[in-house]
Image (cartoon, rainbow, N blue to C red):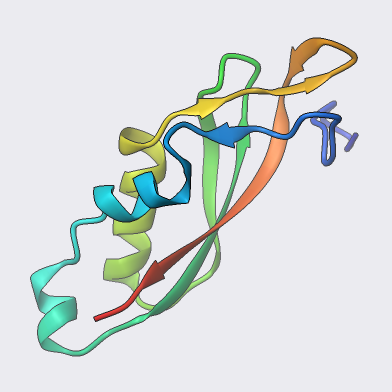
Length: 103
């Protein structure tokens, strides 16, 4: 647990509803990024709260601003999580998600 009482590791980590494949289906590759041949992996860190909602998303490793913005949009608006559990109780957990942009 970190200084903000948010878990880093729990007995049952948060799960993306629909799995990683669900993330890929929600990405809308920005046209300008396609035209410029931008690709890579954006690492985004956030908290999955005890209701399974995403809080405080931050880019940990950037590829390009336009792809970073799409990664944040997908995490905040498109994917859902089952919360993490510790001792049978839903708890907030820090999570890092790599989002791959590949043409």
